[in-house]
Length: 240
Image (cartoon, rainbow, N blue to C red; front, side, top):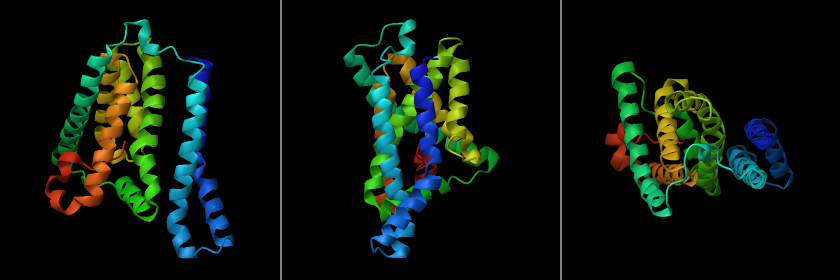
């Protein structure tokens, strides 16, 4: 693994851990600024998520400028721009389909509640601090595709077959979401994005599919939840 990729992994891990320091810090700053304590308890996570994800994304993109060679290019040339666009659009539907299949397996075979505490927490943060939607819909998916597909999957794929690399990286991706009852669902998503990456050789393709899917889920959950609750198991409402 390139040393730049190691720096990116460290930056990503530190970002995830920073919530334990950042949220209390934002809360105290808000209180000193005269904000209502109740409001700050609700808004502080949203403020810090936007700050930490934005800073980390900038840092990682700057690091990537020194490591432009795609790990997958050692096997084949990337797909043409036209084919990449087609796969990016098709990838949104593949991702939703994979999510729906996995959600139904979890519910019908293992009795797992299709609901997600992670999703509920994210939606509550968005309602309190709408700007945090940028994280769940855009910043988060971009960072996750860089970390879990470009770096982790890409590094494994240089040594192992697609199935082994995709399985290992997808399980790591699932475990990182800390919802172990939904490990099959998150793994299915990771597998889908890994497939898109290998099929096109362009990390922008799974990034687009991931961003589009998350944005769709956020919009559905925020504005059409009541109308679509009867098919919740199909679209899931999860944020990968």
